[in-house]
Amino acid sequence: MSPFEFITIFCSLILGLALTHIFRAVSDLYEIRERVKPYWLNSLWVVTVTMWSVFTWWGLWMLSIDMVTWNYGQYWFLVMNLSSIYFFTTLVLPKATDEGDIDLESHYYSVHKAFFSIIAFSLFTSSAVNHTLFGHALATQMVIAPTVVGCAAIGAALTDSKRYHQVIGVFMFLMFIAFQLGDTLVIEFAS
Image (cartoon, rainbow, N blue to C red; front, side, top):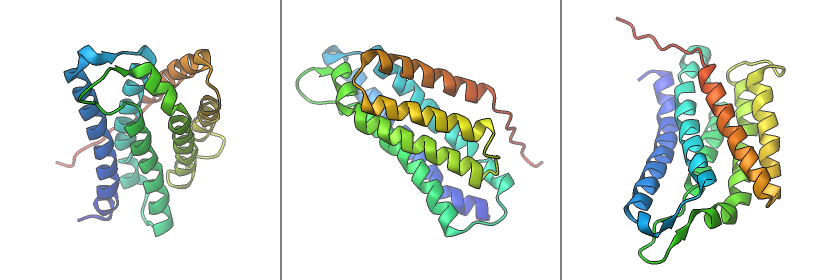
């Protein structure tokens, strides 16, 4: 087992659990869809957090290229960042219930303070991971953009304004599309 494989097994497990949770929640809610009142913003966040998990997993490959040595502090910091992704993924959708209606708009606004606090933490730690583990300078897009978006997430945690939440939801979705389109990573397999 290579050092990269050893380091990323646990990281992959965390992101795999996040994706499993979101896929299971979507499937469960679909099964009881006649009792689920949809909300477009909640659905947009389901797509966004799914993209976030997949994109983060993809980005872990850079650690096989950029990291020659590791220490426990670096590993702990990365695990904390990935754990935040798992935690906000668990909040985006409610558990399917055996009885009663599920209103996704009510759910969204009942968890938004915790959801966006965790998103802000994730974005701030992403900036730190991008700087300390991936070596991006402080004045680069990979460090500045997550910090700016993290500040917007703090605003979402602090406000109940539906308009603000709609704008920030679309903004973060578009940011993730831009990040994915701008990714130049190519994984080559040795023959």
